[in-house]
Amino acid sequence: MKLWARWFRIPFWQRVLGAFVLGALAGWALGDRAGTWLQPLGTLYVQLIRMIATPLVFFAVIHAVSALRGQKSVAALGGRTFVWFAVTAALAVGVGLGTAALTKPGVGVGTLQVTGDYKPRQVPGPVQVLLDVVPTNPFAALAEGKMLQVIFFAGLLGFALVKLGERTERLRKLVGEASDAMIQVTRFVLELTPLGTFGLIAALVGTYGFERLLPLGTFVLTLYLACAVHVVFVYGGLLAAHGLNPLRFFRGAAPGMQVAFVSSSSFASMPVALRSVTHNLGVNRDYAAFAVPLGATIKMDGCGAIYPAMTSLFIAQYFGLTLSAPQLFIILLASVLGSFGTAGVPGTAVVMTTVVLSAAGLPLEGLGYLLAIDRVLDMMRTLTNVTGQMLVPVLVAREEGLLDLDVYNRASSNVGLEEPPSPAA
Image 1 (cartoon, rainbow, N blue to C red):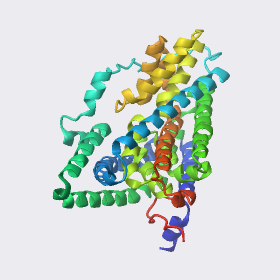
Image 2 (cartoon, one colour):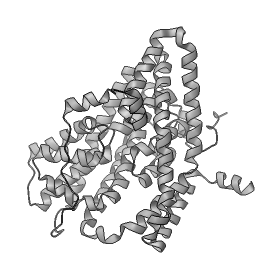
Image 3 (spheres, rainbow, N blue to C red):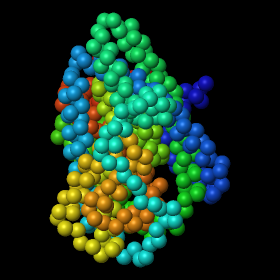
Image 4 (cartoon, rainbow, N blue to C red):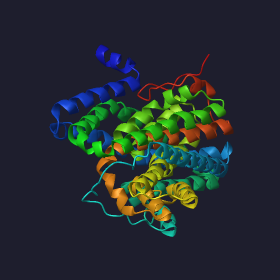
């Protein structure tokens, strides 16, 4: 028991970082065998996260819609959240274009081969995307984890509970208790994050191989640089402009960022991100309950803004094309609007880039060159996505008086079994 207690006294981020380092060493030592022996640990962790994500969102959104009725207008909060989603996405496109213009990752890479399994993606039209938000069978949407459909149906139920008033008081209480129970289950699962990190990183290092990175090393470094600039300077600047200490934010958001990097999944990171913004950063739990899951579906600064913008310049540079000012504007507009329009479509980064390349009139085949290194790119893209999904609720909560500054200024980096920090004396 003393060893167990000592383990939980180690800050959460340090446990995850230690598992990351050990996993990289194990993958290097075991080579291809790491994928066979250690990948199941990572797969188990991701499955556990996916197991809790849908019921967590379902009960949390119902509870949030009914609870927020007496605090702030859900429509007003949603509108302000969407505005910040769009603003930060536009800034991300600018960062991606600027970084690629400076480093020129498409120049001097030689002759690349399109991956054998590459096929241009068929992008659904805007009408179909809107229709797909409404579930024909809510239970199927819950079972299949279609998050936008789950949020839509849960929101309707929440509004119905509000409309019925006192007649549904017991049901609202029951939903609140179910939401609390799912949060507790989330705490249990999050304690396995170091184990999952160890398995995922070991398998990646052991089976990927550096030879696939060498021809496109400049592109990989450019993407990582662009994402780092966006996270540190753009997000940090927005926090400072709101009178918030950026270092506190990154400390509190660290667990969500770590899980995003190793899992490469916004959906799998969503429970950790939700816990981080409420438990660590002091965002009102009812507002965060619908803002964070919504962001996990449509807020994609890495996959939907930086990556398509960089890929457009990479392909133009590779083929010796010069992008005109109208084409650059189209890239900006398509990236910002497309990230909302492709919400819920599998393979967001590929779909988004297909939309942008098509709109800008660039060859789609160029995207096939990058798929061989997509797993490495996706780690940093997803970290950027999830950081933005945590940033916007903090900004909106600050503007609307829904941010507990005492909790924010004492930002913890632990999202595990312990209770939220008590208010300062």
